[in-house]
Image (tube, rainbow, N blue to C red; front, side, top):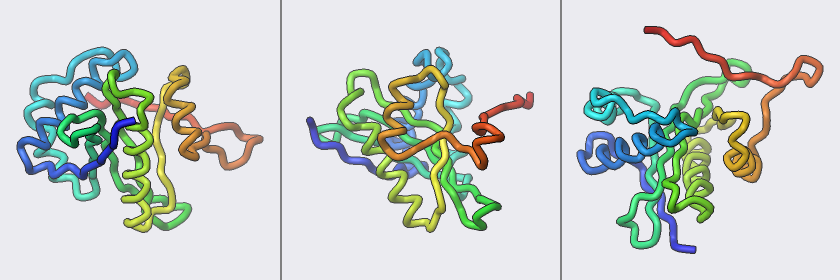
Length: 164
């Protein structure tokens, strides 16, 4: 397996911002990311808008020569009211198809966990499609589990309401 290096993204850096957009666009085009490219406006403004979000952070994983971008993780620090501590939500995790099953995802998860621990966070959260078995297995291997307060009341579900 090639060496994997995860580097924190500087959203103000044009090159790093472009890599972030290219990787996220790859995720968006993937069937598990929705199957459609990002809108041009998103591509143009995403890095500068992320730079304005005070608790956003991202890592790009590089494989081998540290010049080949292989994956991306976008995270946001938010707050757990039950623990009265910050937590980190992993919003996007993408590994290019040619780099899958090579430890890239695990390296990105480890980078996010290390950053969350450094920030004094109480936990990591993420969303995953229920039929994405590969991702589910990877997340379980990293210590993630479905969330429930009391088994009698069931497992928490992720829901959304789009605002247009």
